[in-house]
Image (cartoon, rainbow, N blue to C red; front, side, top):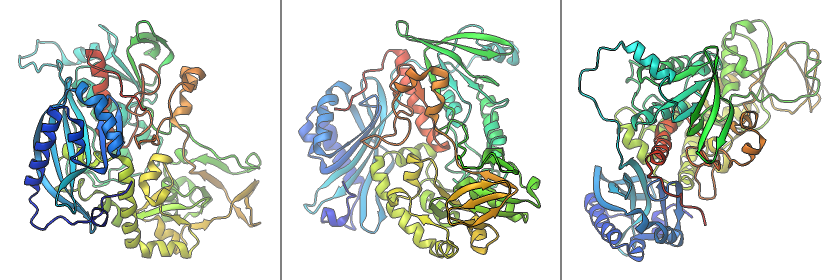
Length: 595
């Protein structure tokens, strides 16, 4: 498996390449082979090392097939069954893309139909030394279903007070919801909006008092998102363009936006509650759940439960250090830190070297607090100045294509290929950040290039942490305003901590920026140990490079998990909504199982 470099292919696209003609010729041959269900003819249009990624359209799952043998078997099994047809070139126009000096291909989008729906595809076509153009990567994506959708009523509504109408809808006085979503963060809200768009009723239950409190109460006040505004949206309701909205959204502002999102889209949310005693009835394929609400225990039946409480489940991960019970100061988790003022005049030690640790240390150092960061393992560091444009400027920047197009393009490559591209991007960022990284190394800060040298990409999928996008804390470490200790912690004393190298550090407060648990650990207390054991792994990727369990089958009927960042929730929420809608409409077929 490798990227299709010019050296590997033995050819460079001619400077006279007409992307439109290349795409039209390839698509004509592809469409003809598909119409005849001629698998060998289809395979002849791909290089031997090609990839075909499918998002629901032919497999009812997320699958990535690599090489002629895998693609051929997949097509033998699914091509005729899926009734793939009506293949037509679509916008934006085909383009010769050159992401690196030794890489280049014609990129084109086309639409298609299947027996149950409509789709969009992205094909990347490379030039061979034979003078032929063949596909290197193809992604087929289900966009919509061939079933009834909510009709737009252009008639003037009856004179019913809006507030009363919404109260009745939100309380589910006439019928129970088809879907119950646990968690009103970006995953739960985005999914509820997607479900409403396809005519499926849902109720979100949220443990906090208000929607958005996870960004107001459970985060430090100075937190900002590290992705630019053009990338960070939920479906149907984009942020305004700067200067009407900051390029990097403050956490508290995002919390307020999530609350407004639920209100303005008329999403049904019950706060200060969660589900209790969920019971699955296999014969009727329904859940029975109890939900404490407004002083009563509401018993509801629903067809689907979606667990959308975040990748970490909101459960603080506290380290176990000998002597913690003897320490006379305060020990808190980073989720309990809000503002720096209470720590004035104190000696503060922050355990951890990820995003939260850096942001909290920067907060404290800027107000003059004596603060020391304890780095227990190396961290991937990239600067906001160089990394954010490098990772976002092509698709998510001022003047970039609409999110609907950018999302398709950015998610159309199999993740194992994205990782290889990320290795190249990471190396470029590190070269641009050389002065910053050298400064960190001089003061003893340990850095890495991310898992498998893929920077933040693989860290997100594997660990959900382990990096920092520098917005100022690294310079404070280099200057010494944030002190640094990298020896392992031996134990705590009443006055501070002792390290494995024999040195000690006095402390009044210890802040543990040590992350959170995993979503999977929150399931057994609610659903029981047996249910939790029957679930597949959540997050990371499977053998094909697709994310385990999230937004797809979980291993338990009628139960799903949903989590990601804002752009991830915007894109992937559509596919869980389509799966649920297809089940309710009787269109859902068996998932194409791995062989």
